[in-house]
Length: 342
Image 1 (cartoon, rainbow, N blue to C red):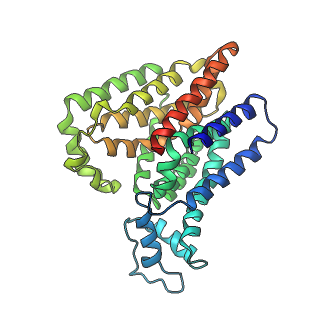
Image 2: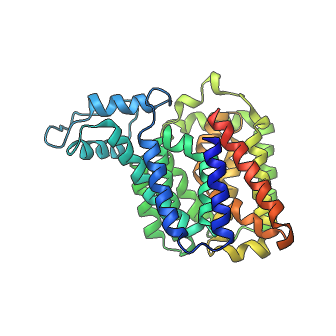
Image 3: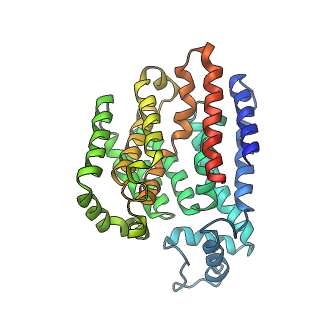
């Protein structure tokens, strides 16, 4: 898989650098292949998958047999459950069911790549590197929900609150954590400046360092609303804390994206919305760092925007240094991907 990823990155480099005319077709085919690979995965290898298989095989009935007493197994979102009910009305094959969920997710991801990514194929590489295996092989409810939320982000830029909250409401039916998308709209009503981001990050470190008890009390009171109560037990406390390397990875990406505003804002009409969303994600990651798993889960919705952010960083290099940037980005993404594979 690592070799396949490296080869895809090399092809993406060729297609983007030389303006390959059919790259949108390649993008569509790539999304289909990725959805298919997620659908045919070994159900015994990937955590959580067996729960979805049991839920589909034993707890999900077709519409003709469905009753109000039916309920899912292993999760609580009825919107996601009804996707299974609808699908089972046509097929009882669990592999095709998993492929259906992955395919639906990648329909939205395809739209996300087209909308937000200045370099769509590089965007796919960035997504696959960090999110694909966890999101589409394990956290499939979150994977679908987050893809929909990201599609909604464009409506923040357009100040179309009706469409934004409509899509967030849809995403909520598949995963409760989509509620975290609600504050982002109001946060984006204020033009977040560079110094706001720096101060916000400092405050996040202060909160997690000196007000741990207050943060943990708040989390304890609200974790159930996000269906994340399993991630606040003693086994999940202080696993890595502020030693979590992803905190500093996101900080590097955030500051690179922020302090190269003059160049990077030209790469996307959604630049300021994306920057604010990624700042929001990083703030959550740091503030909740006493729960490594919880902070990672709750922040990953908008950290997915790395698919738009990371590839554009190449534009901060002079043309004569681009090859160094391309190689460095390829090595970094391949290294991150290899961590998830192993």
